Figure 1 (cartoon, rainbow, N blue to C red):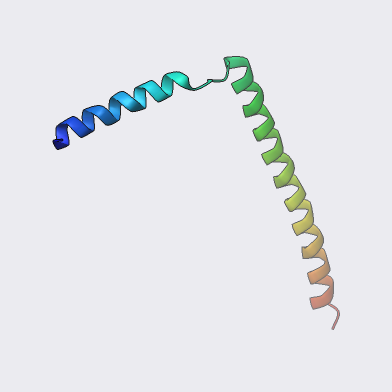
Figure 2: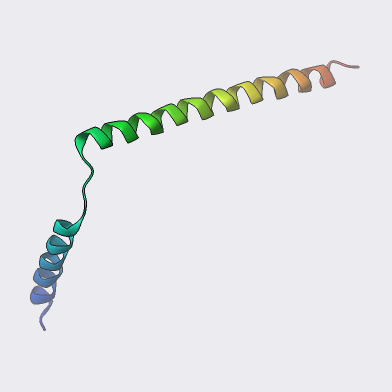
Length: 65
Protein backbone atom coordinates (compact mmCIF):
# COMPACT_ATOMS: atom_id res chain seq x y z
CA UNK A 1 0.00 0.00 0.00
CA UNK A 2 1.39 3.38 -0.96
CA UNK A 3 1.48 6.35 1.39
CA UNK A 4 -1.14 8.16 -0.71
CA UNK A 5 -3.56 5.23 -0.43
CA UNK A 6 -3.02 5.06 3.33
CA UNK A 7 -3.80 8.75 3.70
CA UNK A 8 -6.98 8.48 1.61
CA UNK A 9 -8.09 5.41 3.59
CA UNK A 10 -7.44 7.23 6.85
CA UNK A 11 -9.66 10.16 5.85
CA UNK A 12 -12.40 7.87 4.53
CA UNK A 13 -12.42 5.91 7.78
CA UNK A 14 -12.37 9.12 9.82
CA UNK A 15 -15.35 10.47 7.91
CA UNK A 16 -17.30 7.24 8.43
CA UNK A 17 -16.58 7.31 12.16
CA UNK A 18 -17.64 10.96 12.44
CA UNK A 19 -21.00 10.05 10.91
CA UNK A 20 -21.53 7.57 13.78
CA UNK A 21 -21.02 10.20 16.47
CA UNK A 22 -24.12 11.28 18.39
CA UNK A 23 -23.57 15.04 18.21
CA UNK A 24 -25.28 17.18 20.89
CA UNK A 25 -28.06 19.52 19.89
CA UNK A 26 -27.59 23.29 19.95
CA UNK A 27 -29.72 23.45 23.10
CA UNK A 28 -27.57 20.82 24.87
CA UNK A 29 -24.36 22.54 23.81
CA UNK A 30 -25.60 25.90 25.11
CA UNK A 31 -26.73 24.31 28.38
CA UNK A 32 -23.43 22.53 28.98
CA UNK A 33 -21.47 25.66 28.08
CA UNK A 34 -23.41 27.71 30.63
CA UNK A 35 -22.90 25.01 33.27
CA UNK A 36 -19.14 25.01 32.68
CA UNK A 37 -18.95 28.80 32.75
CA UNK A 38 -21.00 28.91 35.97
CA UNK A 39 -18.77 26.34 37.63
CA UNK A 40 -15.65 28.24 36.54
CA UNK A 41 -17.01 31.43 38.09
CA UNK A 42 -18.02 29.59 41.29
CA UNK A 43 -14.56 28.02 41.63
CA UNK A 44 -12.88 31.38 40.98
CA UNK A 45 -15.02 33.05 43.66
CA UNK A 46 -14.31 30.20 46.10
CA UNK A 47 -10.55 30.44 45.61
CA UNK A 48 -10.71 34.25 45.76
CA UNK A 49 -12.43 34.06 49.14
CA UNK A 50 -10.00 31.39 50.33
CA UNK A 51 -7.07 33.55 49.20
CA UNK A 52 -8.49 36.53 51.07
CA UNK A 53 -8.84 34.47 54.25
CA UNK A 54 -5.27 33.19 54.00
CA UNK A 55 -4.06 36.71 53.24
CA UNK A 56 -5.75 38.08 56.36
CA UNK A 57 -4.34 35.26 58.48
CA UNK A 58 -0.84 35.70 57.12
CA UNK A 59 -0.97 39.47 57.63
CA UNK A 60 -2.01 38.93 61.27
CA UNK A 61 0.87 36.48 61.77
CA UNK A 62 3.40 38.82 60.14
CA UNK A 63 2.22 41.94 62.03
CA UNK A 64 2.02 40.06 65.35
CA UNK A 65 5.52 41.18 66.38
